[in-house]
Amino acid sequence: KDLKLGIASDHAGFALKQTVIAWLTEQGIQVTDYGCPSTDSCDYPDFAHPMAASVENGTNNMGIAICSTGNGITMTCNHHQGIRAALCWDEPLARLARQHNNANIIGLPANYISAEKAIELIKIFLTTEFEGGRHERRVNKILVSRIINQLRCGWSYALSLFGVVRVRHLPTFVSVEPANFCQLRCPECPVGMWNKEQRTKNQDLSPSTTPT
Image (cartoon, rainbow, N blue to C red; front, side, top):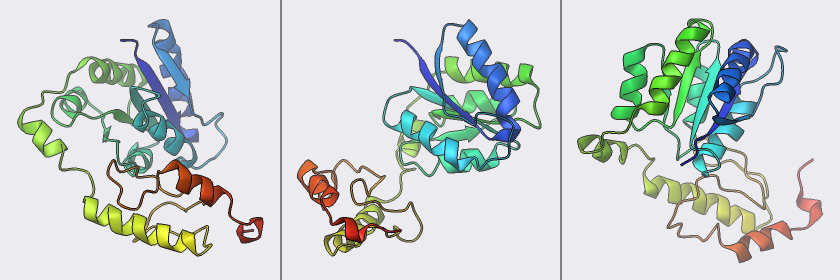
């Protein structure tokens, strides 16, 4: 099937991102740039979250995340339930991230590897298959406990019914909006937060409850 990639960086990773995009385009690989747009100072989560979400929801097959050390942007991506982002700076790490961890985003440290090295790591990452077997069992245990998810979702759902339109998941998570207040999208959510009728109801909350 056609490979679709998302890519994101902060200002420190901008130059490497542009080089990687040019190389991917030459290879005929479809790539969507989620920013940042320049070398002006910025915050990596602003670009990491949309890119990670695009991989999580299937818009893109895989992703590439770049910042100075690769740490912050990779950590950000890994806050998404469906993401397994791996920070890689040499060939064995890139290969094993795919073989053993079924990683779907590669994190790159722009200040510590060359553009040539980055492209080599991406080649390995994109062409290495997940081995499955015992590794699949382990990967399936990475997700946060469903019970914890249900407690988080239930708390936010209950507050939303009383007109509270911006709360935070417990213990720490994303800000909650009335029309789209859960980022977990659990397949068997007990409170029906992805039920269309409930989401429509939340959208109809009085404008007076909207935070300023």
